[in-house]
Image (spheres, helix red, strand yellow):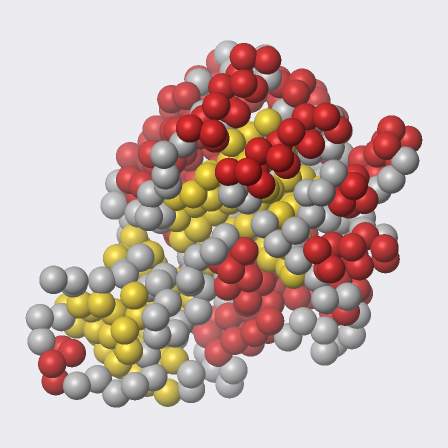
Length: 418
């Protein structure tokens, strides 16, 4: 028999309600509960809490948590080539596990229950996700300069022979970028993804250098490159999308693809500012991601949500991207792309949610709960986090967090010593 949880007197949709969770689904949200609904259920007193959808991080590199603050205040090319890639080459599978634990802990503490990960030693990150009870889309990552032919072939074989995903983890084909995967190999990966029914995720139009080099090499923009190869459709998502032309936006919108914006990382690396107001006008599907800890330097989706809302207004008008729409970019828009029935507090949806402390100083007064959550609050207001109908954080505590922090400190010290 499925476990039942009643979130009692929780603030939702303008009123205090009792919300019933059965198994991993919201069973009753706006309908009144009956006596039988309470029988055998765990009753959670939520009289000081509001319920919000949990965050879905559309793009990150989880294990780069170990490189937080390692290399800052420089542009992308120098940052990657002189600091990040040489250091990443030293990371062992055990290091990846430690870094993934740290990242997932940070995400849970800041209200995220799903992330899209582009990194190496994917089995380590998959294991951590399963262990810590959240969701992920894990990339099988391809980058020609960083892989031997044997490693490339092994990745292809893994995708062709994968026997199925777990309830909370799915695989995604992830060519790193146009400047690390050439035209022939990109075409092969598109064919593979279509044949095996995988989604594709990549970095796209992140810097003006990328645009310039693409124009010189292929005679087109990165978006046009992907269109020419037949890669743009509703199963395609791309991170950054910082430098889209008007034509790019039209092509992208018509394809049904999803752009995952990473404004904090883009501004910190001086890569540019996504033209979010124009993207919205042109009907593009938009989600949010943090990028990695080494370029953001955190995985806080609440911060990302506020930033994109402010940028949209700066680039458009004060009415552009209202709070509730910004919240959708950080929640259900990303979930929808990955085919996950979540990101909303609604009957029949997966029970992924946050309990927000209404006594937190940033939530007082509360004229508009969405305004407070997007513009005022930070992760200190999150008391508890639920994923798939189970608490992964309760009362600000995550099981094993002390050991995760200890292991991360020790691992970082070893990396420096190398």
